[in-house]
Image (cartoon, rainbow, N blue to C red; front, side, top):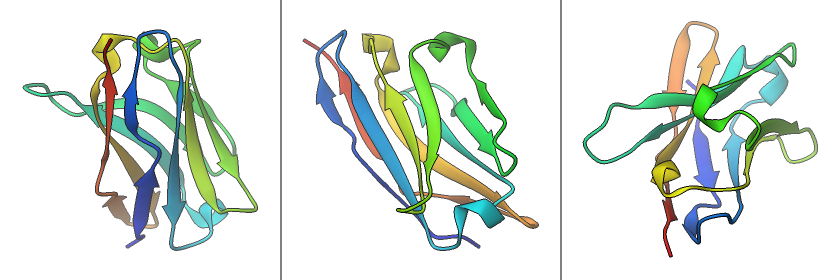
Length: 115
């Protein structure tokens, strides 16, 4: 399995921005796909954004145009840039890695959007 460590969550006002980062224990280019999921209280975990080893990207409809997933080669991280944040974006955000036949999760980082 891959060890994943998230960082960058916090409290932000509506309309603000945050950048989440996920550090992996193996080269991110060897990982088939990495994604960001989120889970709000009382709701199921949902996919927010995903990036494949080939560079393909996909987003949940609710975040298209506001969130951007990317890879930082030098730091071996996958990042999620979030702008125009809304209260409904409040959730615990989890990093996910699909590596060979395994699926790994980070510990999660809280994002709270509130005035």
